[in-house]
Length: 498
Image (cartoon, rainbow, N blue to C red; front, side):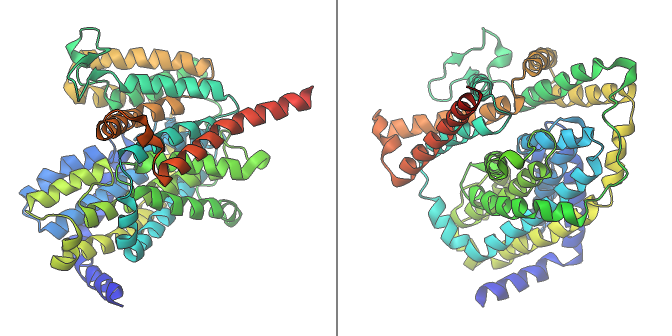
């Protein structure tokens, strides 16, 4: 009953006119930022944070604004992923696998509307979870140490074998390339320059924006140029811009399952929406079996990752609020907002300043409703982007890509690197190497390496720490299963053809 009363008081805070307007503004701005390749929620929240503080907003209002931007970015990331095969951020990578094929089939409107509903449902499931299970789940999440995180990353990498097609070797090679790219730059522990080729421009590593825009955007431009004046005849706007009841029921199970999984992954500090979307996509592909058309335009392939990444975003507030540990990079920035107001996140926050905590939680419900009402009516407008001829679409994509990459360091080196990666990505696509596995390997690489080194530092170099706890043992078993499954499928196919 106390929880219900606190939540009602939170709605009293969130429904104040000023906070409602901030939620609306944040949701709209977040959707726009999420659409722009490479920006993502971290940049969106980081850009607005100093403005929120400079405007003198009270802490609960500032958090409501930043949370709305966060959720809006998660919604917006799917738009460019579906329409032009360029994910707005890492969490939207999985949405390209079936979203873009659906767009090529003239079902862009259906994919956009279903993904918006999936995002809403996943976020709502997770927000209910935040209300009901925050203390319990926070205690469980704190059991994950560096060894557990390393093995979790290994498990996530092995999950890639089931993501794209039936070519686990090419998927593994792509993931290894991504892991290799993540090692470029100065070693954070020893200060040694790694794979920089004596270039000071690579000292900070290869930026995610350069990686994702190069491999996805530039390679897509090169693919589009193959069609010259004829354009992409497969990209035709369909007559429907909304999903029907049959399509909803077909995807509903995947949406609910993925929302739950995304929430659980979200409460693990550092795990993030990228892992959640990858895990749920793999899970739904295995559940569908031979009846699924994953990678070819299966609605569940867009519903599952969208429900998961939005649920993960909401779940990431649990460790931030209850432990003072950011659940994601974006909540780490939001923790900076709390420190600006001299507020220390942690268990005492619930008792000392409940208006801030419960106002934020209530605003997640309100923000989700606002985003659904914003996104569904705009589906037709987004889908019409597909009618743009290549001579307009290609320069537009190129302009956004160049501006996004140049904004990082304002150097031409980043632009040259982006083009080089784009050409490399184009070659990989022609050879049927999945770029999604490469990007996921890159995203997971830094956390994987840092977790391993921290674990070995704690154990003084003893590898036994990676197999010591029940959690690591269970994850190793699951990773082994994920490695064996593609091999068993290959042996079964070979036996059938013999």
